[in-house]
Length: 131
Image 1 (cartoon, rainbow, N blue to C red):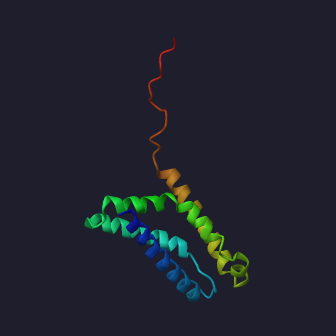
Image 2 (tube, helix red, strand yellow):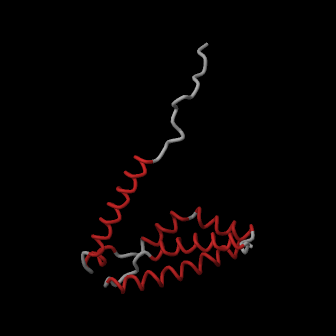
Image 3 (cartoon, rainbow, N blue to C red):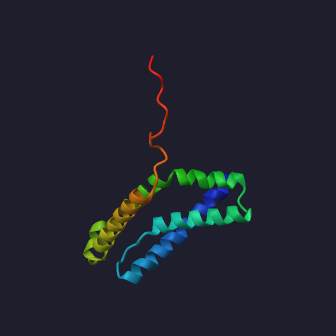
């Protein structure tokens, strides 16, 4: 059933919020750190695991697929609840982690752009004959 996919998301969301709170306490920031991201990663890993074991019916996978399509609105809604000013006042950890995330993403993009192959280029594509 599709509702089971929603139940799986609810479980992942609660587990992600709990783990995000634990991570916040561990690094000394009194806020949830990455709870929504952890929840989405849990949802992806659980879906892959259950699909691999044959325990995920097509209807349940449709429910998970729906929430996968709703990823951006869910993240935006959850991020609106976070207090960025309080996180910055809690110490430089939030600023350093943000800069680290941006730097690591830039490095990954640079590596991928230099090593990857573009299969959509127009090299060796036959040109239509002119009329």
